[in-house]
Image (tube, rainbow, N blue to C red; front, side, top):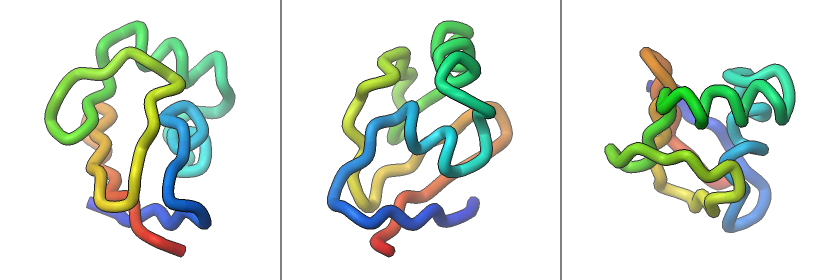
Length: 70
């Protein structure tokens, strides 16, 4: 698991995927979500605009991301 720091209290899931380097761009993030490859706090997620908060865990295939304060 790796930590990804965010500046604010919240970030949109699509933005987080790009920030973490998991998605190259918004289209790639949407493709990952549409393919069912993304889970937030252990639950499948398909909404790119989902709000992600500090302390949330996002899984994309084998990649695990923990959102931390920056």
